[in-house]
Image (tube, helix red, strand yellow):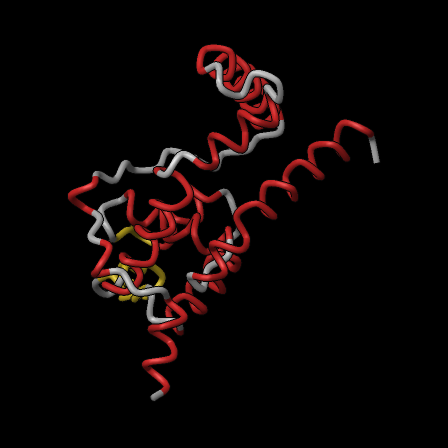
Length: 182
């Protein structure tokens, strides 16, 4: 494998390692989180075929992911009118709570940004301007690579505001699954 591809692959796996423990505590994987977050962005419901396009994966991959999320009670699928090929995917209350908790912890808490800043500017991680330039350069480089290789997935995620997030209403998925078994 070419050194650049190897380095990109290892960096990708390292980022997954950073988030795996938190996501696992919520019963999620990075792929499940991405899918749930995209549905949240779309207003808590969207067409299954649109999910495929936004995520940049195959239809069978989305179908398998949705089947597992449906079994966990995080999403529901419903056939659109009489066209059995089209389905609406909707977050359940549990799915919404789960994805909002993960988003709050991963994205809105600032720890991912701190981890990236510490990696890009190990001696100057506290310098916001320098870190911002380094993140911008990295982002531009990754955008060029994604474009060159025809990657059509999106990373445009919604913002959550503090008033949308009520800690007492959020129960980790593990607790919810345990209660369901009782």
